Length: 273
Image (tube, rainbow, N blue to C red; front, top):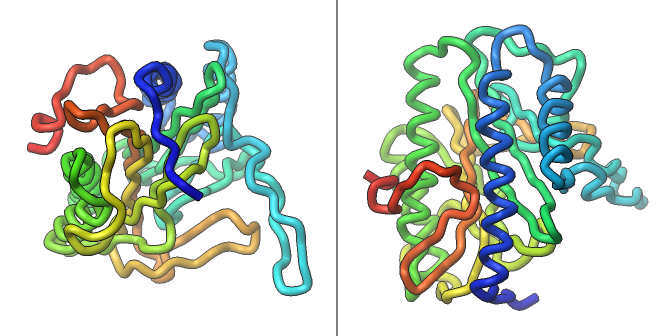
C-alpha cells in the first residue's frame, strides 16, 4: 500500500487531534501515583477524551478471528494501553493492577477527533524511581527526539532508525525490533512502517506531506519480546524494564512538525539537544 501524502489542511486537522492527545497526557499526569489502578487511569482518560468531543481509537480495535493455526484475539478493550515495568506495549488496563512506588508505566493514547487520529505515548515514573530506571526513561525520550531530528525532506526512513539504535545501544540499552512506528491519518495505522533500528541512507525517501509516528521502545536488558496469551500484552523476554515515548510527526519543507506536542514551544533543534 502506498503512502498517502497529507495536505496542509489535513495536517492541521491531525494537529488538532494531536493536541487533544497531548492535553489528555497533561491531565493524566497528576493521577499517575502509587495506589491508583490502571483501570482507573483508563476511565479518567476516556472521560476526558469524550468530554472534548473525541473518541478513543484503541477501544474495539484489532480483533483477529481464530483459525486452526492462530488462536485469535479479542478487540482491544480499553482507551489507553497501560504497560507497567517489563510490559513493552499494549498492556490492558486492569482493576487488579495497582501502581506502586518505583514503578514505571508507559501510557499510549489514541484519539479520533473530527475524523483524524492523534497517537502518542509517554512513560511516567510512579513516585520516586531509582537512578537506573530514571536513566532508561531519559535515554528513551532522547532516542525519540533524535529520531524526530532525522525526519527531514530528503532523508530516508533508515536515518531515523539508525539514529535511535545508535544512541540507545551506545548507552547500554537495547531497541525492540518487532513493534514499529506507522503512518497515521484517518486511520490509526497507515503506511509507512517506521523501524527504530537500521542503516543510514536506506529505506523510503521522506517527502513533504508524510505523517507517521516515531515510538521507540527501549529495554534495560535484551531486545527480545514475549507475547502473552491475551494476544495483546508484550513483555520483555528477560523480565527487564522497558520504556516507550512516541510522537506523531508531519514531514514539511520547513522540517518535522510534531503533531502531538502540547502548547510548550520547542524547535526540533532544542528538543534534540
